Amino acid sequence: MAKNVDLPLLDMSKAPNPSRITLHTRQNVLVQAVKFAGFSLNTIMMVIKAH
Image (cartoon, rainbow, N blue to C red; front, side):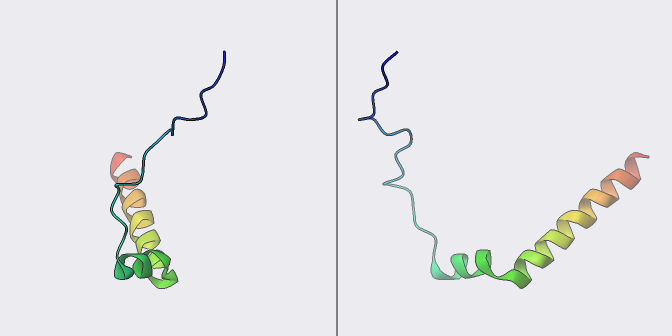
């Protein structure tokens, strides 16, 4: 089967670009640590409630 390499798999040309603040929060290690801790705590609480 021949592949057609002329067609894009996903057209991202019209997708909005993230703002400077959004990029900063995504790359901030402190923000990521807080989100990770919150997600982990949420998962632990879900497991505790299920047992």
